[in-house]
Length: 550
Image (cartoon, rainbow, N blue to C red):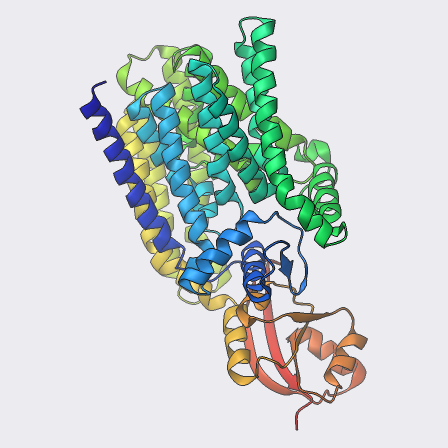
């Protein structure tokens, strides 16, 4: 490939990245923060700025050991630059997604070809799961580019032999990945070890490459410990005890927060996650995986690396007791590369009858999901009875149904490129009524943001606020103050009978229960808001009452 062609390809990739960045940076402004993870990260970052404690994160004034420090450092920086708002909190997720797309392109270009790389970055950016994490103020989209970067350097080393600077670079990227999300940042290493074992020509080569990979891992661990040890000492050993003991070991062996359960029941958990999260491009995966199996898609090193990447992480996360959809987000880039390779492969080669069968089998996964979700969008407004949801939900449903049927028909006719364009255009078209219709409606039924705004307008910032039976961290974030959590009815009564001004936030039905037992409480209603507590999946009428003031 000539230098001019290389420049043109990279210019195309950068142009696509700018488009992706523009879309994601626009999308992150369209909603308030979603409970519960987003406001926890955001509030912890705000407290970091306020306390100037950049060593140990806190939430609601207490030690917060849920995630390592890098996410809070980055969020505190963007909040300082752009102000305390949703854009600042989600900024790095959008940027991380764009970088991940570019790295995916670079990997695809190296192991498959430029066209495959371009298709891979488009597929990655427009898959459902990436659209979710890339617009959320959480650690996933920030961690992904470090993990991907380590894999990109590893793949380069596989081709030309590992150099010392590559070993160091993998270690540095791993270290930052671990600073973003703990041991998840080290997930490339089982992939690397298994890959060099499968590709090794002899035992000595495997030992050598494994040693270099372990050196990289050691560098990453040292970088992580450069922060973790001082943080643990600053908290008298509490940080690592909570982080490692509860959020690493316990998550691996015991389901947390109802995210897991009976092993046999949850063993196939991630299969539907892939079908839904990789939608709509799931349609090409069966054909692409078959092409890999019959050694058509790319060279041996590429095939083994991609399959090891997907299968090993899938198995590791399946055997972890706690399960959440985004835990396997690391396999989305290789899935995008497989789908992209399949698109180009099916376009350029005459398909055998067996190739066609596996291509068509993608419809078995794609069509049921697309028709189910499209139909649900059309039917749901008749049951949810949410004001103004009817029109945008039905439009979104119709677009999804039409896209599903048209893409499935074109795949059945082996019109792979036309089907790909249908999917891309359909996803873009779907997001127009979704962003400008459905999201504003959902904002109207959120309870916390308007509740917090009213309290802040009517009550001085030094007046304490307590909550009972409503534990959504978005209230901490949008109030901008620490909350006193009350655990029983006696605690509520003691709180409201204090002489100094104090605010109580409580669901209406819980307040009625307390008054039936203790009589009318001497409070003044500040604000009442009815909506949906989507974290709990139920309707709620939330009250804010002021006590201790004549």
